[in-house]
Image 1 (cartoon, rainbow, N blue to C red):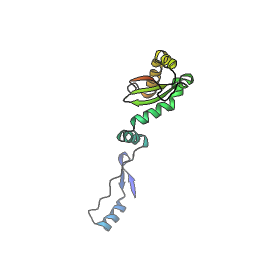
Image 2: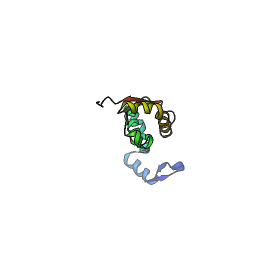
Image 3: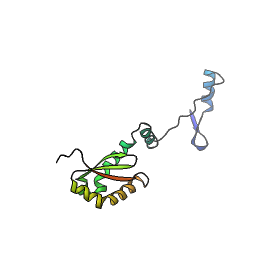
Image 4: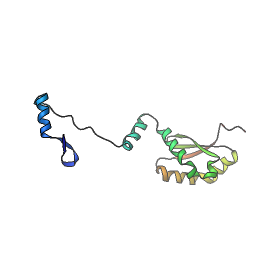
Amino acid sequence: MASRGKRGRSKPDPGWLAVQRERYGPWYQPEPPKSIHAVGEVVPGLIKKMGLEDTSRLAEIQSMWVEVAGSGNAAHATPARWESGVLTVYVDQPIWLAELKRFAARPLEKKLKERLGPRVLKRIRFELDPGEED
């Protein structure tokens, strides 16, 4: 039905085109080929269009959290919100909150920027988990 021309575009077979013009009239033109895109090219645009960027980014961070933060820190701190480049991490105890703010903030920021890209993460905010009861 179609043969490949220059640059990989398909051209209708002249015999097939003659049959179609005989069937539908001399002015018949085949439909232009539909563009095909890889899923990886389309999904980010759809996520943005649907307003799911923040949710998607948070899920991405949560999936790599133990590896990035280390098992000790991850046992007490959980990524909870992502809003316009600011990651909010909930911490379960005040002592861990102080320790993470003092010693882990910069290394975590550096690791996440390496993974996500330097312009994606603006900063990390640590807060006590409002769901934790003393």
